[in-house]
Image (cartoon, rainbow, N blue to C red; front, side):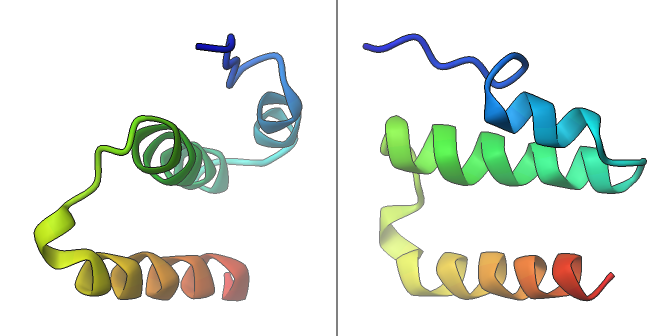
Length: 65
């Protein structure tokens, strides 16, 4: 597997530029959606639509804030 750096890569640069609590939330988005779900395929396969809707709601709230 390719080396995936969440601290040095573009994700890390963006994260470091954000104030709290946005930094923590952004990190949770990257860790869960990008690494766990996309790279690892570790997502709740029995409730994909519900989980997808929840993350969409959270992303919309994040952008609104």
